[in-house]
Length: 356
Image (tube, rainbow, N blue to C red):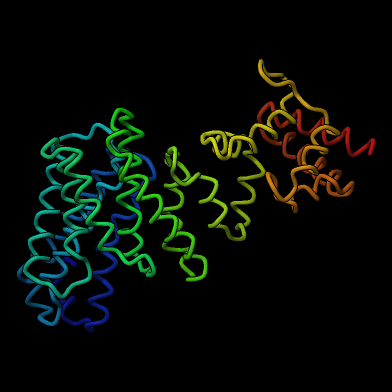
């Protein structure tokens, strides 16, 4: 984009494609955790894009392009960098830059009603940033979130509606995770947010919406808060499932402890994790002794279809499956540093396979 003359020679479609590529360049620095350096790199990318679309020579080279809208898009996306702050202690200059972007985007939205983002979305983003800055109270921020979610269509799965249905609740999860003292204040909003988000997720499988939902379901898995009277975490992961990619299956095989730690975070899923851990932990625990393979197998059979997936139970029942599983795990352990509890699983399964 350093040559307005070359830019002018492109077709409208290619100009729009080039601008789109530049607009989404900051996404390479997005992270599922807070890292100040990555946030600053996102901001720099958006600033560079804004310089381009504000350049009078570039605008003159493409009069058919709506550069005011391109500028709005950049400000809108820049303000949404707040998604990657997770209620950490963020430097003031970052928050003020995001606030300015949110204000500019909101001003455009109020002057131009025929565009793809509603005012509640932008106001919710602005008030989130102001919440970080301490310019508004948490209660005021939650009031905005109510309007934000109410403005979303729970039956539509374009990226905008998915964000509007789920982001307010996720922002509140992150707030309560970082500052547990606010959980009681957020309780009523979270209960309603869980209900609405669950309906959105529950129906998404029939809408072919996995691609735009996966980022948010990852957030939910990491930060969900179970509340008395709310929806158990178990209901979420039971409703949103699909076949695993090969790479994902490799990760699952290599990191069984991750599954245990995840399930063990919530009351509704803790029995699954506890039963398997008790069965495979040969080190012993103060409140629960380890089980041999026969005891574990009886427990699995008894609770197949209730606590445990019956297809997975069948893997342990089958002699062939046990032998295959044993040999594969042994090969993995010989090549990688696996966790201690996995060695207990190997010994138990090997014993069961050889004696059953």
